[in-house]
Amino acid sequence: MSTVNYTEYGLAPWIDFEGVGSTWQAKDEIAFTVKFKGHHCGIVLEYEQKSGKDYIAIENDTNVCITLDGDQIWFSKEFEGITTKESLSSFYGSLEYLDYDEKVERYKTVRFKARYNKGGKYDTCHRFNINIDLRQKADDGTERWIGLTIDPDIKNPPPHA
Image (tube, rainbow, N blue to C red; front, side):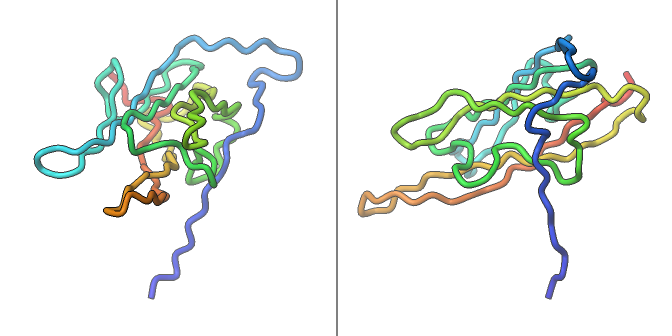
């Protein structure tokens, strides 16, 4: 019997990285797309971004936008869309939900702020969760929702070039 307890941490609800009254400005924007689709070999989960990396690389203070691509997945209705596996609220916060689908009462996109880990070791891995709801239709036409967690990484700072 396993006795391991897993904990998920939320992002800082509102984060002002430079202190009270600052006007923090992101130097970068990252669009990270998660695709969940059927393929001839089964179900395929893919990450897509311009850099071609399968992780999010934080090289400057950044706005991160994550979009779910697929007609069966949305961000979780019950849980926060993005959580971390350790307390990282000094690096990530201000989670916003976008692209609300009224038919299923769920979101397709989230955005959050990421503070660059200045002085951190290269290739520092911040593990995070994307909490989704998978919609399945039964043979009789009824729907059911299954909660899943997708587990990509944030490298902050990324590996040295």
